[in-house]
Length: 287
Image (cartoon, rainbow, N blue to C red):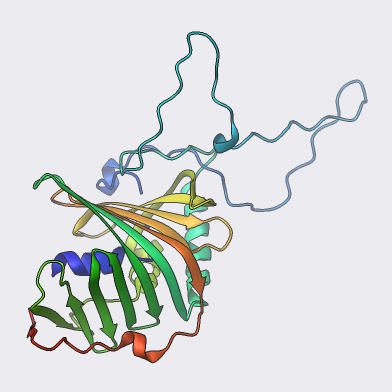
């Protein structure tokens, strides 16, 4: 059950570089600062001619790779926790704080959400990797539905009082039920990740990447207090400031990556989406 709850906290946002202790944090990568105001005008040239402004640097994603005799094409960058984003100049903790503040404000306007999700889990201890897909529906603050299309039929529902997990792909006769509320799991991902982030994390902007065709800031979040995760990374959309991807590495080196696609904000969702009735013949287990 711990693994399924961990999945909930990852989805939707969705939030990295190596998550070390604060005193041993990696050096800051370079990333684009959040615009703070108009740039100063360039000084006039000694000849009196109007200065020519330098062309802005071309994004990494648009630069052509070098070609020619003897030059081998660069291998594609792997999408994993070890893959570094394109560095962007003059990144600072202040930039990360500004981005998190904008993300917090963006999620404050979210009442409901639906998206397609892709989740990848890698468990080195068991030598296993698994990718799952499905649809996500969220009605804040305490209702959630994850319909898995792969593995087909698996379902997770939070109805405001309980979290229900039914995975016929592994056990058709069992339903897991866990109470929500004090001491139980949270299903409001934005609350879990963006509630007072400056108090809970040491945040660093480490670069930019493209997620599902959209530009995104890449931030590392180092927990200030002991956590079950030792590495966190979040991709925040550079236009609407919603989380598009989240990665985490647990203490046992299990890696999880969740990406949200086709995201729709504030759709009208029927209440029936968040009701769950255990199938006939199943037994309900409460951990």
